[in-house]
Image (tube, rainbow, N blue to C red):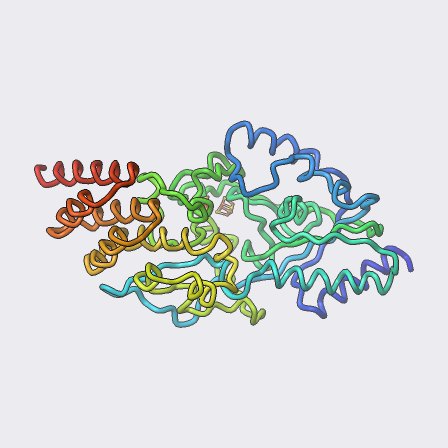
Length: 381
Ligand code: SF4
Ligand code: SF4
């Protein structure tokens, strides 16, 4: 079969199995990306979650010898929720970012790519394939860009004409030659809404993200966060959508045709207080199917404490005091100390003084000292 015909067959199959966009590119190294990644690492902008070996990130042939082509795919996900539950006094809620709504997209996209790979093997029996979805070494965005799926905006998201940046990306390297597509020529122009809207200034310049300052990354870390970030996180439990929400290329775009990605409002906008007491098992049963659970319950619980502070929820003081008494994790106690001081009020100081008498961990004690000093200062002012 001719390469162009093979490509058409794959495009047809992709449609049948619910892939929203498909594009093709060569397996040539991503030369330009190499320089940017080295610079990124030198500046300390990497998140640490990505593959550390730059060569593996830019050379498809290191993952499949004789690699000739890469097939990139995109699936659209919803940007709105039907009947979102409201945060109410004493019943405040956190939020998971849209990319974590519904079933874990890693699994969904991998299954689609596996279906496509087995179809390719029907047409070319000895075809070899390697599938990657987000956690692979290659950059999904760079592959998708070169394969003509979309362009990369100043907010570093891959933006498609049809679905904006509300798309999941994945790819398959193969040793079969498939004619490549052309990248799309479109840009942000004078717009800089995302740079101005970013709460932490993580977009250091158009198209350059310092992951160490980005809330999307910070919500996934496990330790105590510095105060400047805790003040900015708001009620985000996992991820941050701000630079995509403000993007005019996403205006009015919402796609609900994949039932797997439909959000369960009680799960993606859960009540905060019950999160504090969840067992590992309850956490897995409630959130285990969502991509936002991949780091386990600790970051989500820490973020829930920060969110309670954001809402200044005095009714949460009792729960936070219990954390100080019983939670074995110093990072979580330290965050609870900060939250209690931020919520403030007549009981907060006493709770902290009581905790000071019991606490033995130096970092938590230090946090108690710091917040008591600032509470004193606030009372005097
Ligand atoms: S995800 Fe949030 S914190 Fe990160 S760059 Fe976008 S707006 Fe800024
Ligand atoms: S908000 Fe504006 S500058 Fe940012 S990615 Fe969207 S179009 Fe580009």
